[in-house]
Amino acid sequence: MPTWHLRSQRKPTGKLLKPLRKKRRMDRGGIFLAPSVGEIKKRIDRVRGGNRKVRLLAVNLANVSDEKGKTKKVKILGVVQNPANPHYTRRNILTKGAIIKTEIGLARVTSRPCQEGIVNAKLIEKA
Image (cartoon, rainbow, N blue to C red; front, side, top):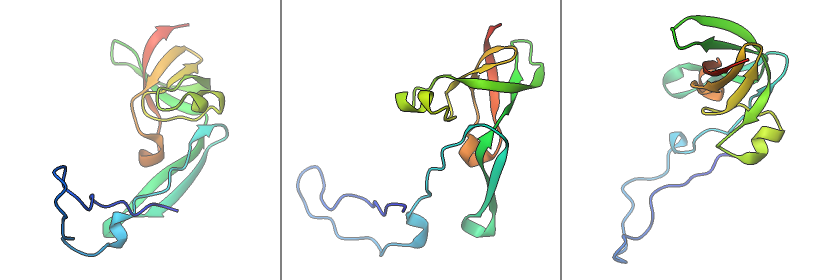
């Protein structure tokens, strides 16, 4: 379940703060759905304003751009490093900043797969 964290009850000086308003549904935040490497699976969620957000649950392709700006759709072989959490590397979980192994070399993920529904990456080392 999402948490309902709001601002602190006290200022750094210790003064008690009065609430500005009651809690709202929008204050909850979303559940983190860990997108992993595998056969493509997506989920569409309704978000604020009636908009839709495509969430990736699993993906096996990435749009990788090289230093010249050319972009190719390549297969993801696995996650090499994930600075968000060391356990994500072992579980092949993709987040922004993760370094992935692709068919053409190592690439860093520049998009937010769980928020945007796509994996964009920049090539950092050729195979």
